[in-house]
Image 1: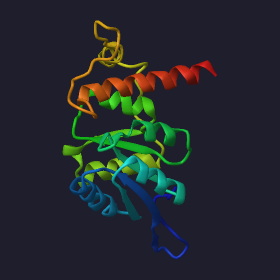
Image 2: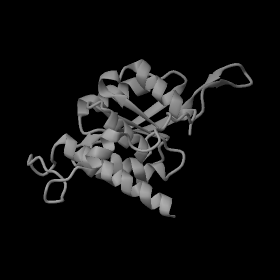
Image 3: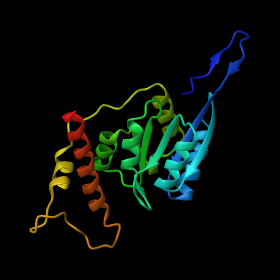
Image 4: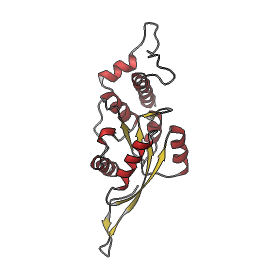
Length: 196
């Protein structure tokens, strides 16, 4: 991972290369985030963009990245499985982004392994710069002890027939359906991790 700029023996400022993968299916949001990233002082930031999970996984297999910004809601699902995969890979912190800024989404992202969260309305240069510097310095946000009650309720919500609720909104389901499914997936991952 790149280091903060420092003076070398000649007194000149040096910059470190910081390779960032941005996973977002919205090209406008991805572009705004990339613009904010490349403007971070003290780094030579190089951004690559992936529009879906498959593309992100291919890029991560082919290249080394210092950090990842992953949008929660992608066209082919959520970024939670990718975040969980990256959490098992040291040296590549993930910051989750989302237009839906709810405690449930923040908690699910953090529990899956995201080091931080940025709401898309907060994707300002100063917010992005602070997230990058915190990730590079290895500062993780405080983690809640377990899922909040609202996330547990979502994860355990069942229909009278005993299965998960469905909004009937088609293949992708509603946002609350995805949050519920992700809460269940994170809880399952945590149970498996404790069983080892």
